[in-house]
Length: 341
Image (cartoon, rainbow, N blue to C red; front, side, top):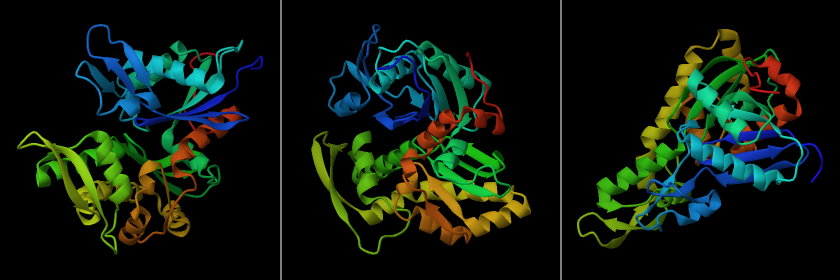
C-alpha cells in the first residue's frame, strides 16, 4: 500500500461524496447516506451505496439519514463514521501516515459550520484539511483559466446547494450560494404528483422521474413513464402515468430559481468582467447541469451563451484534486488554512 498517504480532494456533497486521490484520479463516488436503527443505540447498518439500496424497503425501526444537508454537516457523528468508511474504501487502512485533504464547502457557510467540517475530518483520520469554496473548485475542475485577469461565470448545481460566481485572478468577485438544489427539485416532483394524482412516492422514485423525464425547456416530443406509489385515498399501491410535460411544469419554479441566482450575480459584476462573461459564456457544473435544456433556457433568458462543462458531476472533485496536487495554489484563492499539519 506504500509508506506515505496521498493527498486527497473531496467533493463533500449532500447527495454524494466523491474522492480524488493524487496520482490515481477519482477513485470513489458514493451516496452521502447512512441507514441507522431508529432507537437510542443509533446502530449504523449501512453507508453509501449499500444504504441507498435499502431506500423505501426498510422496516419501521430503521431510518435513512443524510449526514450532509445543504452542503453542511447535519449529523456530526455519522459524518465522521461515513468519512472513515469512505477513506478506507479509497486508500485502505495499512498506511503509516495520515492523508491531507482539500474539501469543498458552500460559499456562504458560518464559522461554526467551517469548524465542524474541519473537526470531522480530523476525527476521521486526516492529518490536515484545507477548505475551498465549491464554486472555485468547480472552476478549476472545468479547466477554466481561474488565475487570469478575466471574468468567468460558473454555476454549480449540486444536491443541496446551487452556487454562482464570477471569478477573476483566482478569487470570487461576485457570487451567491443558496441551499436549494437537486434534492429540492426531487421534492417539487413529489409534491406535484401528490397534488395532481393523490399519490405518495419515495425520494428515490422522484429522482428517477427527474432523470427520465425532467427538462428545463418543453420537450418537442412528449414522453411518458409509469410511476408507482401509494394512493393517499385508499392507502393501496397504485400506478399512474406521468408525462414529460407534467414534470416540466413541476420543475419550472426550481429552474427559474437558478435563473434568478445568475441574474443577481450578473447585476453585481463589474462592467469589464461582465463584458468578459458575455464573450466567454456561462459554464454549468454539478448534477443539476445535466437537466436537459438547462443551458438552453439560461442562454435564451439571459442572452449569454451557456454550456455544460465536461464531466459536470466530477468538476468539484477534480478541482479539489487539482488543488490537492498543487497545495501552493490555495494561498492564491483566499482563506484556505489547514486545521493541523
